[in-house]
Image 1 (cartoon, rainbow, N blue to C red):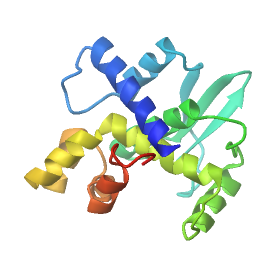
Image 2 (image 1 turned 90 degrees about the vertical axis):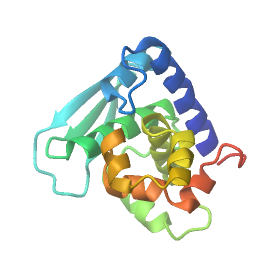
Image 3 (image 1 turned 30 degrees about the vertical axis):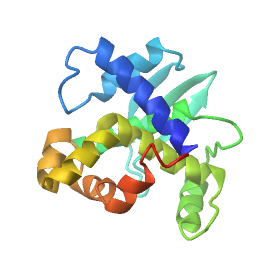
Image 4 (image 1 turned 180 degrees about the vertical axis):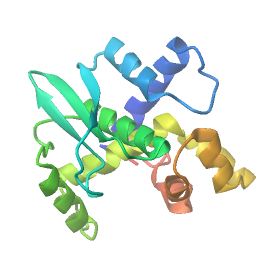
Length: 188
């Protein structure tokens, strides 16, 4: 599933590079990702600000109604983290299937936390990881991560270049994550 998610992210990246005006920049725009996706087979998606205080537990959520998807995102998120979260939620929609869907946000968070130590996590937990992996493939492609790892590019420089949170850059630049998400590793 993770390999399929990353492959779909690569397809959307190719569409993005072909159709979006600033396709050579390292920072990719989530609004243009939405546009690409809606031009090419994705359902209607709206990104809405969550305007009530729900604490730090949930940065975002998806609601489905009549085949359309609403992504609700906390307004107070750091802009780089917000961009990542929106892309992750878009890839949740790309990967959506009733057999792996858990629309109860509190239950889903419990599943993810509980399954972190499990050898065989539940499908909804695998989809969560796959959505993040796909979002990172779109925002900071694996080939770029490998190149920057070899060059020893500082994490803060990468965070600025790709407009991503430094802790996320640090996680995905780890040797383990670079190896785990290597397209040559089968279903990554």
